[in-house]
Length: 411
Image (cartoon, rainbow, N blue to C red; front, side, top):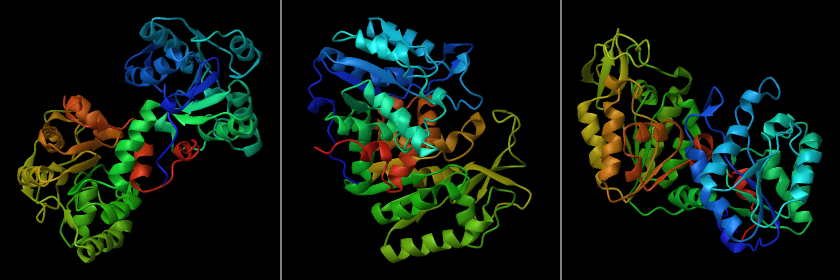
Protein backbone atom coordinates (compact mmCIF):
# COMPACT_ATOMS: atom_id res chain seq x y z
CA UNK A 1 0.00 0.00 0.00
CA UNK A 2 1.39 3.41 -0.98
CA UNK A 3 1.67 5.24 2.33
CA UNK A 4 3.26 8.49 1.15
CA UNK A 5 0.16 10.70 0.97
CA UNK A 6 -0.33 14.46 0.72
CA UNK A 7 -1.27 15.86 4.14
CA UNK A 8 -2.71 19.16 5.34
CA UNK A 9 0.88 20.41 5.58
CA UNK A 10 1.29 20.01 1.80
CA UNK A 11 -1.65 22.16 0.67
CA UNK A 12 -2.31 25.88 0.55
CA UNK A 13 -5.93 26.43 1.54
CA UNK A 14 -5.99 30.23 1.91
CA UNK A 15 -9.35 31.50 0.64
CA UNK A 16 -10.29 27.99 -0.50
CA UNK A 17 -13.27 25.86 0.56
CA UNK A 18 -12.05 22.67 2.24
CA UNK A 19 -14.36 19.73 2.88
CA UNK A 20 -13.08 17.71 5.87
CA UNK A 21 -14.42 14.20 6.55
CA UNK A 22 -14.15 13.70 10.31
CA UNK A 23 -15.13 10.87 12.61
CA UNK A 24 -17.71 12.48 14.89
CA UNK A 25 -19.45 9.16 15.58
CA UNK A 26 -19.64 9.98 19.31
CA UNK A 27 -21.80 8.28 21.96
CA UNK A 28 -24.93 10.27 22.84
CA UNK A 29 -27.29 9.91 25.78
CA UNK A 30 -30.47 12.01 25.80
CA UNK A 31 -28.93 14.34 23.22
CA UNK A 32 -25.76 14.87 25.29
CA UNK A 33 -22.28 13.71 24.25
CA UNK A 34 -20.93 11.24 26.83
CA UNK A 35 -17.39 10.96 25.38
CA UNK A 36 -15.86 13.63 23.11
CA UNK A 37 -12.51 11.87 22.45
CA UNK A 38 -13.19 11.79 18.69
CA UNK A 39 -14.05 15.49 18.58
CA UNK A 40 -10.87 16.39 20.47
CA UNK A 41 -8.83 14.15 18.12
CA UNK A 42 -10.08 16.12 15.10
CA UNK A 43 -9.13 19.57 16.48
CA UNK A 44 -5.47 19.79 15.30
CA UNK A 45 -6.46 19.37 11.63
CA UNK A 46 -9.40 21.79 11.91
CA UNK A 47 -7.30 24.41 13.71
CA UNK A 48 -4.54 24.14 11.09
CA UNK A 49 -7.03 24.79 8.27
CA UNK A 50 -8.61 27.74 10.13
CA UNK A 51 -5.16 29.24 10.81
CA UNK A 52 -4.21 28.90 7.13
CA UNK A 53 -7.31 30.86 6.07
CA UNK A 54 -9.39 28.01 4.71
CA UNK A 55 -13.19 27.97 4.66
CA UNK A 56 -13.73 24.77 6.62
CA UNK A 57 -16.72 22.53 5.84
CA UNK A 58 -16.94 19.54 8.18
CA UNK A 59 -18.89 16.34 7.58
CA UNK A 60 -19.32 13.01 9.38
CA UNK A 61 -21.72 10.16 9.98
CA UNK A 62 -23.17 9.33 13.40
CA UNK A 63 -24.79 6.04 14.34
CA UNK A 64 -26.19 3.45 11.94
CA UNK A 65 -29.33 5.43 10.96
CA UNK A 66 -31.50 2.36 10.41
CA UNK A 67 -34.92 4.05 10.34
CA UNK A 68 -34.19 7.19 8.37
CA UNK A 69 -33.14 10.64 9.59
CA UNK A 70 -34.03 11.49 13.18
CA UNK A 71 -33.07 14.15 15.72
CA UNK A 72 -31.56 11.49 17.99
CA UNK A 73 -28.75 11.03 15.47
CA UNK A 74 -28.38 14.64 14.37
CA UNK A 75 -24.91 16.20 14.58
CA UNK A 76 -26.31 19.30 16.36
CA UNK A 77 -24.69 18.37 19.73
CA UNK A 78 -21.34 17.97 17.92
CA UNK A 79 -21.57 21.50 16.45
CA UNK A 80 -22.22 22.84 19.95
CA UNK A 81 -19.23 20.99 21.46
CA UNK A 82 -16.98 22.00 18.53
CA UNK A 83 -17.90 25.66 19.02
CA UNK A 84 -16.84 25.38 22.68
CA UNK A 85 -13.57 23.60 21.86
CA UNK A 86 -12.59 25.95 19.01
CA UNK A 87 -13.71 29.10 20.83
CA UNK A 88 -15.62 30.19 17.73
CA UNK A 89 -19.04 29.66 16.22
CA UNK A 90 -19.45 26.47 14.20
CA UNK A 91 -22.51 26.99 12.00
CA UNK A 92 -24.64 23.84 11.87
CA UNK A 93 -26.62 22.98 8.72
CA UNK A 94 -29.56 20.96 10.05
CA UNK A 95 -30.89 20.08 6.57
CA UNK A 96 -31.53 16.31 6.33
CA UNK A 97 -30.61 16.47 2.65
CA UNK A 98 -27.03 17.35 3.82
CA UNK A 99 -25.98 19.18 0.64
CA UNK A 100 -29.20 21.10 -0.16
CA UNK A 101 -29.83 24.82 -0.73
CA UNK A 102 -29.21 25.69 2.95
CA UNK A 103 -25.73 24.15 2.80
CA UNK A 104 -24.92 25.76 -0.56
CA UNK A 105 -26.05 29.18 0.67
CA UNK A 106 -24.07 28.87 3.92
CA UNK A 107 -20.90 27.91 2.04
CA UNK A 108 -21.30 30.82 -0.38
CA UNK A 109 -21.46 33.22 2.57
CA UNK A 110 -18.30 31.83 4.26
CA UNK A 111 -15.28 34.00 5.02
CA UNK A 112 -11.71 32.81 5.58
CA UNK A 113 -11.44 30.88 8.87
CA UNK A 114 -15.20 30.19 9.10
CA UNK A 115 -16.37 26.69 10.04
CA UNK A 116 -19.63 24.95 9.19
CA UNK A 117 -20.77 21.42 10.01
CA UNK A 118 -23.07 19.54 7.64
CA UNK A 119 -25.81 17.21 8.86
CA UNK A 120 -25.16 13.46 9.42
CA UNK A 121 -24.03 12.10 6.02
CA UNK A 122 -26.02 8.90 6.55
CA UNK A 123 -29.25 10.88 6.59
CA UNK A 124 -28.97 10.86 2.81
CA UNK A 125 -29.41 7.09 2.79
CA UNK A 126 -27.02 6.90 -0.15
CA UNK A 127 -23.81 7.45 1.81
CA UNK A 128 -22.86 3.80 1.42
CA UNK A 129 -22.80 4.22 -2.40
CA UNK A 130 -25.36 1.53 -3.24
CA UNK A 131 -26.77 1.94 -5.83
CA UNK A 132 -23.58 3.41 -7.24
CA UNK A 133 -25.31 6.19 -9.21
CA UNK A 134 -27.04 7.57 -6.13
CA UNK A 135 -23.79 7.36 -4.16
CA UNK A 136 -22.01 9.20 -6.96
CA UNK A 137 -24.70 11.90 -7.00
CA UNK A 138 -24.18 12.55 -3.30
CA UNK A 139 -20.37 12.42 -3.66
CA UNK A 140 -20.53 14.98 -6.49
CA UNK A 141 -22.80 17.29 -4.46
CA UNK A 142 -20.30 17.15 -1.58
CA UNK A 143 -17.46 17.94 -3.97
CA UNK A 144 -19.48 20.85 -5.46
CA UNK A 145 -19.37 22.55 -2.04
CA UNK A 146 -15.56 22.52 -1.91
CA UNK A 147 -12.28 23.16 -3.73
CA UNK A 148 -10.17 20.64 -1.77
CA UNK A 149 -10.86 17.59 0.38
CA UNK A 150 -9.22 16.31 3.57
CA UNK A 151 -9.94 12.85 4.99
CA UNK A 152 -9.33 12.63 8.73
CA UNK A 153 -11.74 9.78 9.54
CA UNK A 154 -9.61 6.67 9.91
CA UNK A 155 -12.50 4.86 11.63
CA UNK A 156 -14.36 4.99 8.28
CA UNK A 157 -11.34 4.65 5.97
CA UNK A 158 -12.07 0.98 5.27
CA UNK A 159 -15.41 1.91 3.69
CA UNK A 160 -15.70 3.18 0.11
CA UNK A 161 -18.48 5.59 1.09
CA UNK A 162 -19.48 8.75 -0.78
CA UNK A 163 -18.00 11.09 1.83
CA UNK A 164 -14.86 8.98 2.39
CA UNK A 165 -13.65 7.89 -1.03
CA UNK A 166 -16.34 8.72 -3.63
CA UNK A 167 -15.95 12.49 -3.27
CA UNK A 168 -12.24 12.45 -4.20
CA UNK A 169 -12.86 11.64 -7.87
CA UNK A 170 -14.94 14.81 -8.30
CA UNK A 171 -12.44 16.97 -6.38
CA UNK A 172 -9.70 15.73 -8.72
CA UNK A 173 -11.86 16.48 -11.79
CA UNK A 174 -12.13 20.13 -10.73
CA UNK A 175 -8.38 20.43 -10.13
CA UNK A 176 -8.51 20.22 -6.33
CA UNK A 177 -6.30 18.29 -3.92
CA UNK A 178 -7.25 15.26 -1.80
CA UNK A 179 -5.14 15.14 1.37
CA UNK A 180 -5.15 13.36 4.72
CA UNK A 181 -5.48 15.10 8.08
CA UNK A 182 -3.15 14.74 11.07
CA UNK A 183 -5.15 11.85 12.57
CA UNK A 184 -5.06 9.84 9.36
CA UNK A 185 -1.37 10.62 8.92
CA UNK A 186 -0.61 9.29 12.40
CA UNK A 187 -2.51 6.06 11.69
CA UNK A 188 -0.61 5.59 8.43
CA UNK A 189 2.72 6.31 10.13
CA UNK A 190 2.20 3.95 13.05
CA UNK A 191 -0.02 1.12 11.78
CA UNK A 192 1.18 1.20 8.18
CA UNK A 193 4.85 1.25 9.07
CA UNK A 194 4.47 -1.35 11.82
CA UNK A 195 3.20 -3.77 9.23
CA UNK A 196 5.34 -2.71 6.26
CA UNK A 197 8.71 -2.07 7.93
CA UNK A 198 8.71 -2.70 11.69
CA UNK A 199 11.72 -2.27 13.93
CA UNK A 200 12.49 -5.81 15.11
CA UNK A 201 11.84 -7.89 17.12
CA UNK A 202 8.19 -7.34 16.16
CA UNK A 203 5.61 -8.91 18.52
CA UNK A 204 1.93 -9.04 17.57
CA UNK A 205 -0.73 -9.79 20.19
CA UNK A 206 -4.17 -10.94 19.09
CA UNK A 207 -7.10 -11.55 21.40
CA UNK A 208 -10.86 -11.24 21.31
CA UNK A 209 -13.52 -13.86 20.92
CA UNK A 210 -13.54 -15.20 17.38
CA UNK A 211 -10.85 -16.72 15.16
CA UNK A 212 -13.06 -15.99 12.13
CA UNK A 213 -12.74 -12.21 12.65
CA UNK A 214 -8.96 -12.42 12.57
CA UNK A 215 -8.28 -15.11 9.93
CA UNK A 216 -6.48 -12.86 7.47
CA UNK A 217 -4.82 -10.87 10.23
CA UNK A 218 -3.20 -14.00 11.67
CA UNK A 219 -2.08 -15.07 8.21
CA UNK A 220 -0.66 -11.64 7.31
CA UNK A 221 1.03 -11.05 10.67
CA UNK A 222 2.79 -14.42 10.50
CA UNK A 223 4.49 -13.09 7.35
CA UNK A 224 5.59 -9.92 9.16
CA UNK A 225 6.09 -10.50 12.90
CA UNK A 226 8.68 -12.50 14.84
CA UNK A 227 6.36 -13.64 17.64
CA UNK A 228 2.57 -13.94 17.57
CA UNK A 229 0.82 -14.04 20.94
CA UNK A 230 -2.72 -15.39 21.04
CA UNK A 231 -5.15 -14.87 23.94
CA UNK A 232 -8.87 -14.35 24.46
CA UNK A 233 -11.55 -16.70 23.23
CA UNK A 234 -9.72 -17.43 19.99
CA UNK A 235 -6.95 -19.27 21.89
CA UNK A 236 -9.27 -22.21 22.63
CA UNK A 237 -9.74 -23.06 18.95
CA UNK A 238 -5.94 -23.22 18.64
CA UNK A 239 -5.71 -25.41 21.77
CA UNK A 240 -8.44 -27.75 20.49
CA UNK A 241 -6.68 -27.92 17.12
CA UNK A 242 -3.68 -29.38 19.00
CA UNK A 243 -5.92 -32.06 20.49
CA UNK A 244 -6.47 -30.59 23.98
CA UNK A 245 -9.72 -30.66 25.96
CA UNK A 246 -11.16 -27.13 26.23
CA UNK A 247 -14.37 -27.87 28.16
CA UNK A 248 -17.20 -25.40 27.58
CA UNK A 249 -14.82 -22.71 26.25
CA UNK A 250 -15.64 -20.77 23.11
CA UNK A 251 -14.50 -22.78 20.06
CA UNK A 252 -15.03 -22.41 16.33
CA UNK A 253 -14.96 -26.00 15.11
CA UNK A 254 -15.03 -24.90 11.46
CA UNK A 255 -11.63 -23.23 11.94
CA UNK A 256 -9.68 -26.13 13.51
CA UNK A 257 -7.91 -26.99 10.25
CA UNK A 258 -7.07 -23.32 9.70
CA UNK A 259 -5.47 -23.14 13.17
CA UNK A 260 -3.44 -26.30 12.41
CA UNK A 261 -2.29 -24.67 9.15
CA UNK A 262 -1.22 -21.50 10.97
CA UNK A 263 0.74 -23.46 13.60
CA UNK A 264 2.43 -25.34 10.75
CA UNK A 265 3.12 -22.11 8.85
CA UNK A 266 4.75 -20.56 11.94
CA UNK A 267 7.03 -23.60 12.26
CA UNK A 268 8.03 -23.44 8.57
CA UNK A 269 8.80 -19.72 8.77
CA UNK A 270 10.67 -19.97 12.08
CA UNK A 271 8.11 -17.76 13.81
CA UNK A 272 6.89 -18.28 17.36
CA UNK A 273 3.19 -18.62 18.22
CA UNK A 274 2.58 -18.30 21.96
CA UNK A 275 -0.61 -19.82 23.36
CA UNK A 276 -1.88 -19.75 26.97
CA UNK A 277 -0.17 -22.28 29.26
CA UNK A 278 -2.75 -21.78 32.00
CA UNK A 279 -6.33 -20.52 32.01
CA UNK A 280 -8.78 -18.92 34.43
CA UNK A 281 -11.93 -21.05 34.33
CA UNK A 282 -15.46 -20.78 35.75
CA UNK A 283 -18.65 -22.82 35.53
CA UNK A 284 -19.99 -20.44 32.88
CA UNK A 285 -19.95 -16.97 31.39
CA UNK A 286 -20.67 -14.24 33.99
CA UNK A 287 -24.25 -12.94 34.00
CA UNK A 288 -24.40 -9.99 34.07
CA UNK A 289 -21.03 -9.65 32.35
CA UNK A 290 -19.54 -7.50 35.16
CA UNK A 291 -20.78 -9.70 38.03
CA UNK A 292 -17.82 -9.74 40.49
CA UNK A 293 -19.15 -12.78 42.41
CA UNK A 294 -18.03 -15.27 39.77
CA UNK A 295 -16.11 -18.26 41.23
CA UNK A 296 -12.91 -18.97 39.32
CA UNK A 297 -9.80 -21.12 39.47
CA UNK A 298 -6.68 -21.49 37.39
CA UNK A 299 -5.90 -24.73 35.52
CA UNK A 300 -3.33 -25.81 32.93
CA UNK A 301 -4.52 -24.97 29.42
CA UNK A 302 -3.93 -28.58 28.42
CA UNK A 303 -6.33 -29.80 31.13
CA UNK A 304 -9.44 -27.63 31.18
CA UNK A 305 -12.23 -29.61 32.95
CA UNK A 306 -15.07 -30.63 30.63
CA UNK A 307 -17.66 -28.74 32.73
CA UNK A 308 -15.64 -25.48 32.86
CA UNK A 309 -15.24 -22.50 30.55
CA UNK A 310 -11.97 -20.60 29.97
CA UNK A 311 -12.49 -16.84 30.50
CA UNK A 312 -9.00 -15.29 30.92
CA UNK A 313 -5.30 -16.16 30.69
CA UNK A 314 -3.73 -17.52 33.91
CA UNK A 315 -0.82 -16.19 35.99
CA UNK A 316 1.96 -18.18 34.23
CA UNK A 317 0.67 -17.05 30.84
CA UNK A 318 0.64 -13.41 31.97
CA UNK A 319 4.34 -13.72 32.84
CA UNK A 320 5.13 -15.54 29.60
CA UNK A 321 3.42 -12.85 27.50
CA UNK A 322 4.96 -9.99 29.50
CA UNK A 323 8.45 -11.50 28.98
CA UNK A 324 7.85 -11.73 25.21
CA UNK A 325 6.83 -8.05 25.16
CA UNK A 326 10.00 -7.04 27.07
CA UNK A 327 12.23 -8.26 24.23
CA UNK A 328 10.26 -6.42 21.52
CA UNK A 329 11.06 -3.20 19.66
CA UNK A 330 7.59 -2.99 18.03
CA UNK A 331 4.33 -4.33 19.52
CA UNK A 332 0.89 -4.30 17.92
CA UNK A 333 -2.05 -5.39 20.09
CA UNK A 334 -5.60 -6.07 18.97
CA UNK A 335 -8.15 -7.79 21.20
CA UNK A 336 -8.40 -8.44 24.98
CA UNK A 337 -7.02 -11.54 26.74
CA UNK A 338 -10.29 -12.37 28.51
CA UNK A 339 -13.65 -10.99 29.60
CA UNK A 340 -12.02 -7.68 30.62
CA UNK A 341 -15.41 -6.06 31.34
CA UNK A 342 -15.49 -8.22 34.49
CA UNK A 343 -13.11 -7.11 37.31
CA UNK A 344 -12.28 -10.73 38.20
CA UNK A 345 -11.53 -11.65 34.57
CA UNK A 346 -9.62 -8.50 33.59
CA UNK A 347 -6.27 -9.51 35.12
CA UNK A 348 -4.84 -11.05 31.92
CA UNK A 349 -5.69 -8.01 29.80
CA UNK A 350 -4.36 -5.76 32.58
CA UNK A 351 -1.05 -7.68 32.72
CA UNK A 352 -0.53 -7.31 28.97
CA UNK A 353 -1.43 -3.60 29.10
CA UNK A 354 1.02 -3.12 31.98
CA UNK A 355 3.79 -4.92 30.08
CA UNK A 356 3.21 -2.64 27.09
CA UNK A 357 3.18 0.44 29.34
CA UNK A 358 6.57 -0.52 30.81
CA UNK A 359 8.40 -1.38 27.59
CA UNK A 360 10.64 0.96 25.58
CA UNK A 361 9.18 -0.48 22.36
CA UNK A 362 6.84 1.33 19.98
CA UNK A 363 3.41 0.18 21.18
CA UNK A 364 0.40 0.32 18.91
CA UNK A 365 -3.13 -0.49 20.09
CA UNK A 366 -5.39 -1.54 17.23
CA UNK A 367 -8.63 0.18 18.19
CA UNK A 368 -11.86 -1.47 19.33
CA UNK A 369 -11.88 -3.44 22.61
CA UNK A 370 -8.11 -3.15 23.16
CA UNK A 371 -8.37 0.64 23.02
CA UNK A 372 -11.32 0.51 25.44
CA UNK A 373 -9.30 -1.78 27.73
CA UNK A 374 -6.17 0.42 27.92
CA UNK A 375 -8.35 3.50 28.45
CA UNK A 376 -10.40 1.77 31.13
CA UNK A 377 -7.31 0.37 32.89
CA UNK A 378 -5.54 3.74 32.87
CA UNK A 379 -2.62 2.87 30.57
CA UNK A 380 -3.62 4.95 27.54
CA UNK A 381 -1.04 7.71 28.03
CA UNK A 382 1.78 5.12 28.11
CA UNK A 383 1.09 3.81 24.58
CA UNK A 384 2.85 5.16 21.48
CA UNK A 385 -0.36 5.08 19.47
CA UNK A 386 -3.97 4.07 20.04
CA UNK A 387 -5.81 3.59 16.77
CA UNK A 388 -9.12 5.40 16.31
CA UNK A 389 -10.55 2.68 14.09
CA UNK A 390 -11.41 -0.89 15.08
CA UNK A 391 -12.44 -2.37 11.71
CA UNK A 392 -10.06 -0.12 9.79
CA UNK A 393 -7.05 -1.02 11.90
CA UNK A 394 -7.83 -4.74 11.54
CA UNK A 395 -7.99 -4.40 7.75
CA UNK A 396 -4.73 -2.44 7.81
CA UNK A 397 -3.13 -5.29 9.78
CA UNK A 398 -4.55 -7.73 7.23
CA UNK A 399 -2.55 -5.86 4.61
CA UNK A 400 -5.69 -4.67 2.82
CA UNK A 401 -5.81 -1.38 0.94
CA UNK A 402 -8.17 1.04 2.68
CA UNK A 403 -10.35 3.07 0.25
CA UNK A 404 -10.02 6.22 2.38
CA UNK A 405 -6.21 6.00 2.29
CA UNK A 406 -5.91 4.95 -1.35
CA UNK A 407 -8.16 7.84 -2.47
CA UNK A 408 -5.81 10.53 -1.10
CA UNK A 409 -3.30 12.02 -3.54
CA UNK A 410 0.26 10.69 -3.43
CA UNK A 411 3.04 13.17 -2.68
